[in-house]
Length: 187
Ligand code: ZN
Image (cartoon, rainbow, N blue to C red; front, side, top):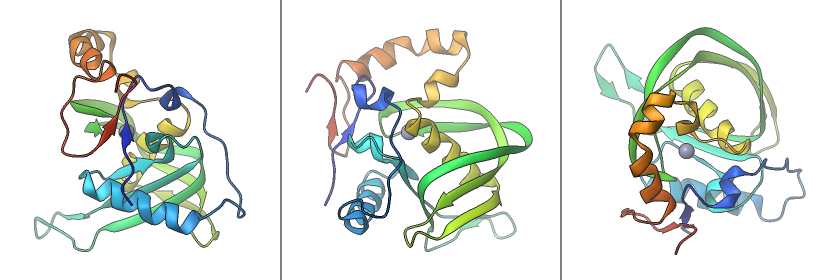
């Protein structure tokens, strides 16, 4: 089932999401639906608050890039993060061009640490505590921000924020066209 994705301006995107436990109802179906919703929208990550569920659940799926052959792997590398927790930041900070399904048509370079030590439960409720790097670490940080009521544009410099203010207002006011179904606070 495809969920509508809520846009910036919707209050759920600004809430601190709550942890879940093994008794959360129909979790497997919800996770499957989140992957379907993310891929349908050409996203590489989706946090539950983006479908108006204020819980600490994230799905990530991207085709890993291989520098040697200059190709993208198939199938996608997927990670389901339940109650993820960043334990430590690793490596240098780097810029990477980010976008967000809740903020269509805006792409900006965002500075974040390259790696993380991350603790999370997977869909089988196995506990992981791993050092993660590259694309996985980048997307995980963007999605964990969503669990904490933050979006990537919050992390831009004041000058960049000013420059994209009009586009942000368009999103907040529901003046966006997307190939996927969105629910903004104005429609
Ligand atoms: Zn996002």
